[in-house]
Image (cartoon, rainbow, N blue to C red; front, side, top):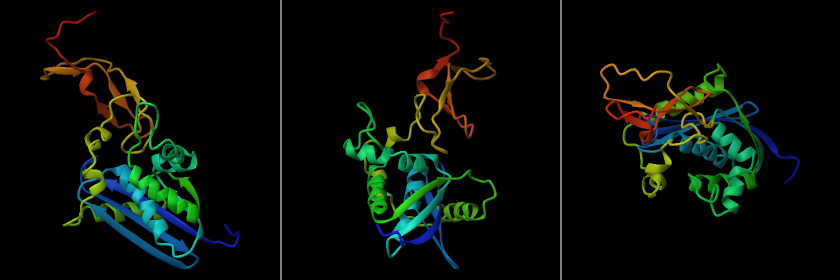
Length: 228
């Protein structure tokens, strides 16, 4: 690639509410010198991670010639997959993450990898909702988009057989659905009953954004005899 590539800055964000399976949107801001362009759109049923990847795709697809790109995103899932080579390795292994797990969102990773062969892209993670003007604008664009009526179907998401399982957080180490940070296993300090008929022996917790995930396998009835 020529060293004379024009330098473009792209800010992206994706959103889904509720996540996964709810309406989703993406927002993109492209800046080249004094020129500025905004893009947005959405789907009727998708995931937050898919919208984060899709935003990057739409930003790069908007470039008419090969460019040097600084792409800013608050999605660690997106940035790490590209900068640490995860997506490339998944593709080389026929989209297997490891011996037991297939990679998710392979249709989008394939498109994004192809665009990164055309452009020279540096993905940069930024903290979300930290007052960075263009990132806040992308967030606004994404949420405005997901609230539009008549959103098209995200067919690749809705039609794949693993969709239901792909959205579940069931074990430690899986990426948080909100920020992509690996979740950890936590044990509740108490098993307060209140009016509940059950409690959870453990739950999964994101140390970055503090999201909690209750695991059905950890659900226990108060009527069950205790082993200890």
